[in-house]
Every structure is written in structure tokens, then in C-alpha cells.
Amino acid sequence: MTATTRPARTRTRPVVGHVATAVALVVLWVALLAPVPAIGWYPTPLALLRVPLEGVVLVAALLVLRGRVRRWLAVVVGVLLGALFALRVLDAVFVAALYRPFNALTDWRYVGSAHDLVGDAVGPTVALLVVAGAVLLLLGLVAVAPWAVLRVGSLVERHRSAAWRVALAGAVAWLVCAPLGLSVGPDLPVASATTAALTAHEVTTVRDASEDRASFATQIPVDAFADARPDRLLTALRGKDVVVVFVESYGRVAVERSPDVATALAKGTSSLQADGWSTRSAWLTSPTFGGISWLAHSTLQSGLWVSSQQRYDQLLETRRLTLARAFSEAGWRTVDVIPADWRDWPEGRAFYGYDHIYDARTLGYAGPGYGYAPMPDQYTLSAFDRLELARPDRPRIMAEVDLVTSHVPWAPLPRLVDWSAVGDGSVFLADAGKAPTRDVVWRSTDRIKTAYGQTVAYSLDSVVSFLEGTKDDNLVVLVLGDHQPVSVVSGENASHDVPVSLVTRDKAVLERIRSWGWQDGLRPAANAPTWPMDRFRDRFLTAYGPGHDG
Image (cartoon, rainbow, N blue to C red; front, side, top):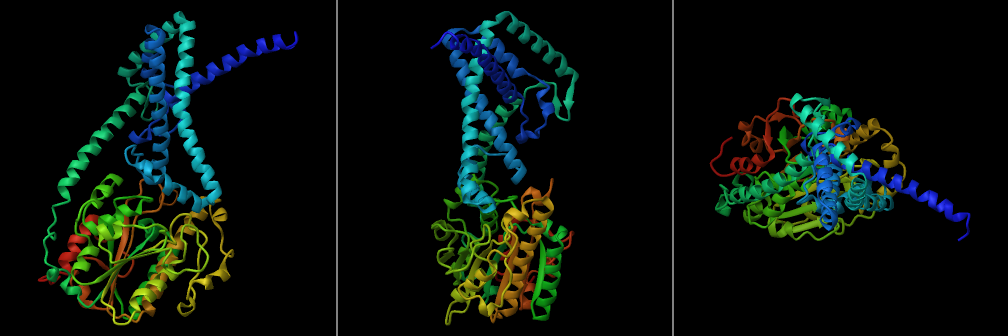
């Protein structure tokens, strides 16, 4: 080391130290005052213009405690602040996308689903980088907060007199502002206790989850159909094939705001009526919003309000009677068609009661993918027809068919081809690369909303076209949405309502539900009946059971 370099390094160290201390103060300040979406406080810079009670207490504790005890306090408090800051970030993401805060007990398992979803929107490589970056960010928050508290603790120790004055001034300011109700913005009081409120919220969440688990455990066995004899189940549908079609993200916003969906519903109603079909429609309120479709599926099937992952996991451990199991016990062959699933799903048989499950590996598709959807909905319906409905000498079928073309990112958009040309799906290779890609669609909110409506309209067109071409006159089809689309399409304060339609050629089937008050056609009006989705199972089993005349 030369004589000229030593003084330069000596001059640099204080600068680096001052910068590090400033960074630590900023990190600590933001960690204490960042808004909490989970309890209704949303991000705004004004939130940082407040006095944090927790900061005053922390400075006082760092002044009173000394040595190893102070260092341990700094580490523990730092880890807690970092974890709470990470929860704030996750809350903001979940509230924006799903209209609910992050649940630290159960929502970690969605990392894989989040990776798949981002991959469908921006590609697998970028998705891996995004998810890895998000994980590193959250871990970084947890790691940097203890360093910040230790750094601030050293500053307090070096400037004890000044630190006492700061703590005293902060305490006085907090005590003055709190009773006066002074604020820097809506729901942003100058006297802040944000971190304490978030801590209390998380403790309450854990307590509520425990209570909800106990409460749900008492609801599961309460079932009017638990002991129903097979020969007393679904007697009015004997001789019918029954298909439940879930259209991904088909929510009230699609019906009321998308001109493409409005056209599809109007044309579909007219086409079906001309072909001898009758339809009735209404609304169901889904337990989920923007995603996590399996909560809606299990709610419809079980007749229970499955509004959380905890409830879903709890339900799957039971033998609650599902619609699929009821049909199976009554003599139907039951199948599930899940075109976007690539993994084994043992719960499909063990809990739901399906005799057979088709997924992306077994549907025989040889064409291109469409964003999230490994295959277009037209192919899914064609494969179901070929594999099940068109089989000779078969039993009656009850099926759930999931149509996923309308899953985010809503691009690229397939086109309908002649049903006789669908085959193994290779016909769709000719259109690969022609439709706007997700990169084009996601350049503006207006394009996203338009693409969403177009994909839902495509799914509905596929169903209508399929019904027009089917040779099965004994087909009864329930078409419904699973949930509303994410908030970039639905907007703020959107409901959880989804459309539901019953389609059949047999007017006697519709006569059984006359008392429901459902409306003619595929498009329910704004004032059509609206039921919580968990009410459907019991009403359906009652309507099509013995002794019911509508």
C-alpha cells in the first residue's frame, strides 16, 4: 500500500459509513410506516410522514438495554420487522389480484401456481427470474431489517443524548397527535401504530384460522343427503348425460361489460333455441376471486362454502357427498376433464368420486398451446365427445369439463374450425403465430380487457357449436364461471358473481327447476336470482330427486 492510497481509503470509510447508516434509517422507517393492505391501508408516500409509536419504543429500548441483550433485541426485532414488511408486500399483491390479503398459514403453497401463471403471461424463463427475484426480495427484507436495527442501535449508542431527545420528541408528538386525530391523509393518522396493528392482525388471523377449522369441521358432517339411498338420488335425470362445464374466469364483468360476450350470448341463445335447446340462467356467488378455481369447483360439488385453502385441504380429508359421487352411486359413469393439468390428481377419485380423469397427458392433443391453455376449448370438447359420449354401448355419463382458454393471459386467441377437422388438434398448427401474443395484448389495459372478452366469447361459442353438432338428445349441460377475472379487468369493488346456465332439449328437465326463477336464455339479467355457490348442490339434488315437481 502506498502513501497516497492510504489517505484516500481513510477518507472513504466515513462516507461509506454515513451512507450505510442513512440506508439503515430509511429501511427501518419504511418498515415501521409502510401501509398495511390487509387492514385497508394502501400504499402512498404520505404514509411515511407519520410518527411511528413502535420506533419511539424501539429507540428507548436500545437506549436502556446494553451489550449482548441489546444486540439480541436488535436481531429479534429486526427479523420481526422484516417478516412483517414482507407480509405487507405479499398483502399488496394478493389484494390487487385476488381482493383478499395474503394468508401466511396457507398461501405459501401457491408459489408453484404463481410460477405457472407468470410463465403463461411472460414465458417460462422470465417467469423463473421473476419468481426467483420475488423470493430473493422477500428473503432480503427479512435479512436486511436486523442489519438496519443493529446499525441504528450503534448510532443510538454513539449519540445517546441526541437519541434521548429524539425519543422524547417522538413520544410527545405521538401523544399530542393521537387524541387530536391529526392525519396526513385518509386513514393515515400522524400518530402511527401500523406495525403493531399488523402484528395484531396476523395473530388474529392465526386464531381465526384455528376457530374456522373447528367450525368447518362441524359443518362437513351436516348433510341432508349423506344417507340417501342410491336409488333415491337423481331419479329425474335417469337416462340423461349430465355435463358440468366450468368456463375459466367467466364472471359478471364478462356479461355486463364485454361486447364480444354479449354477442356470443345473444347468438348462442338464438342458435340453441332454433336447434331445439332450452336454457335457463341466473347468478352464483363464487367463494373466490381472480383465481384459485378449485375453491369454486369444490364449493359447487360439496355444497359447502370452501373459501380458503385451509377449508379445501380439510374437506378433501373427508367423504362428503359430492355431485360427482352422487351420480356415481346412482349408476352414472363419472369423468373429469382437466386439460391444463399435467400431474396425477388422486383426490379426483378419492374425494370427488370420478371413475376416470383426463388431463393434458391423456387427451391426445397434437397442436399448439394458447397461453395458459395447453389446447383450445374446441379440442377439449371434441376429445371428450370422442373418448366418452361417442362410445357405443356405454353407460350414462356425468362429467365435469374445464374450459381454460379464457385463463389469463387471454392470448393468443384460437379460432373455431370445422368439427370434422379437429382430429388430434394438429389442424390448429396452421394458425400458430397468427393471433396477437401475450406481449402485444398486455401493452395496455384496454387490450387486456378486450382480449379477456374475446377468449370468454370463444369458450361460449365452442360450447354452443358443440351442442349444435351433438347427436346426444339426452344431454343436460350446466355452464358456469368459476370466478371473476383479476382486478385489471374486473376493476375495484367487483362482486364475486358468475353466470350459470342450464341447457337441455328436454323441457321436463327445466320444469323441475321452475320454482328457482331462473331466466330464459344464456344471459342472466342484472336482477336474475343470485345464490351463494354452496347452495347449488342441495337444490340440484332436491330438484332432480323423487317427489319434486318444480
